[in-house]
Length: 469
Image (tube, rainbow, N blue to C red; front, side):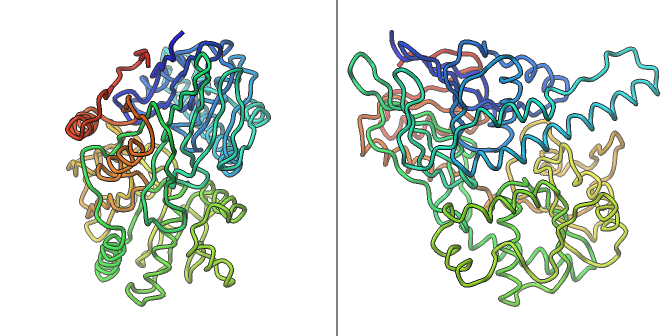
């Protein structure tokens, strides 16, 4: 029996990552993420995982972002009782991120059900996809495997995690498969990080790959150098402060928030920005920052040196980690300039919506977009600078300055993705490249570049498509 790859999620889109690897004797699921998009479509896609939980032998998780890990409680709820393999930092992050996802679902369901009852809408009550009991079950099935330690996960499959350099604990997953006595190597990038980024180590390179399954989020564009982002950030903060405005930064609680704090700290120490309060208004970001402190083994050499010198990359003068909702509301009542870093990164939920509601109609204020914004999200509509945007069901004029800073992205850009693929080809008999986790334009551009460079087989699978390699 040949090796088969079924791309169940993150096929020609950047969310809901799920890939089923079938060998002669085993079924291994790479990732089990939540789909994020239109509310109705998201509910339907997430309730139907597109696979039979009882037929899977093992799950391999590359990192803790919810679009990669968020449906694991659904999988376990549906009867999966096997192991879930991840790095130690990823397991610790899942403990706080999955619990947070369960709390958000419960809160959203309560709010919507009250609205249904109040408006006498003829609709079924909203049920959360999973609850905290399902999260506890999921965590009990997670097995932490350190980087570079080979682990057998099924009868004919072994996994080794290499550092992906994307977020804390993120891994390139190298599957070694026994194929009738021959060893085949399938490499899955998860989300591939960038070289030279602060805090984390650079991505590692696997040897001997036969098949590469790679993300392609930025397959059609290049990022500016990270040092330019610090200069641009300093300029935006300074001019917004000069006009007496607030800076709102929708940010993923994992990695981006910590990265922004580190950058603002450096700018503050260099005297490149005026002093102003900085609020991290996300209980999840606070908890994740605590996890960062537990895993210095994931830091790059420069960050370890900072920590060993008694300093913290996650503290700076005027920084406030906000916990209570009352403290969060108080930020919007402030009249002086400040920086507000709040989740969610795509502006689909969380406290950032309240801050956007309070700031977007005032041209003194600025919204900085520092991460990829998927189609049909509020973040994408802000990036497109639509004159009116809907927040909490009410249309508001977008008069605030909008600044897009792709250079803060933790995803590799086109040149970095190509460099990674070519380096792997030099290290092994790479024959098949499978592009996932990217929108069609990015994947088309990436495929064309790979073919031009002589890669013999490049697949861009549709959702549910099965590839034989």
